[in-house]
Length: 441
Image (cartoon, rainbow, N blue to C red; front, side, top):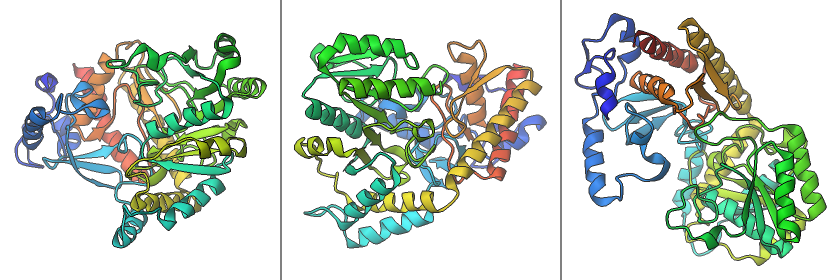
């Protein structure tokens, strides 16, 4: 964590919550945090993990790859805050990388999980709550006539592609260049250990460019099984891009004309933007949707929903897992979806996102910076204008992390229903210190 030495404005932290030598201008913003120097437990865990885990920590959870101030290990979550193993608390704008939509340890979700665990979790047959959850999904998702349940987003996207191929008897699948659809060989962005044969029937188009989709479909010809697409462009290391309605409608028309399945990868956006499906406001419904992340407020679960036309194919494929019928996660999903349906949770998430976006824009301008904020307000991303390599943005997110605000420099953030106006205002007090630190440097 070499960036720690650059945090000259932060000062030294002794025991948890004890601050020595913090500049008056930043005292308010640093008193509660700074993993930058109060991270003894975190460092010990990182050292131990390197002995027994390849690379220490793998995948998107490898925090040092994107931050010099945020901890690698978390011990506790409550509402919109997380606390690391050294007692530093952060206002959380990653929400477990998306799954936590209602807030960490939401009472209704926890109660449902505890009640189910008292009866059992991994049993010899499917739990009754599985039927209840499938009925709830069909009643909530606009295009859904049925639902299959799994464990994570890769399960759901892979099952969707398998169903499309089974239904059509075709092989070719089109996806937007740069989009993330999971970590299976057919779609992983890192091709180490992946063979050309794993990707032989995958072709690419440019997001929001209907002509490039048509060209890819022409290359596939009569072998086109599916087009898989995210609700909006959410690639890392670039600004997010909302979906043009004409593009979405064009994909629907192309799939109708060719007999291919339109798959909406709603793993990241689902149940945060619109309960009926993230493309419902565009008036476009897919044939299949993949869900995970927010479906169970942090408990491991995924789903595929589909139309009646694909029911038989979904019945014929073989897909399963030892823990796919875990009852506790399904109970968590029923509680989560019920809370989302029966309260104003989605409105609160959007309001918090707007408040944060407006506050950050005002702060940046006041400190003489031009920033670009992209994506839906519920899933925002901030980048400094002209910062194509995200180096300045990372400095700012490091400063924010040192002041107890958990954000990412190049992956979209997430807002949740537990972010109150007071939480957003407190976060903005701290991010103002982050902008001020950049100004001084």
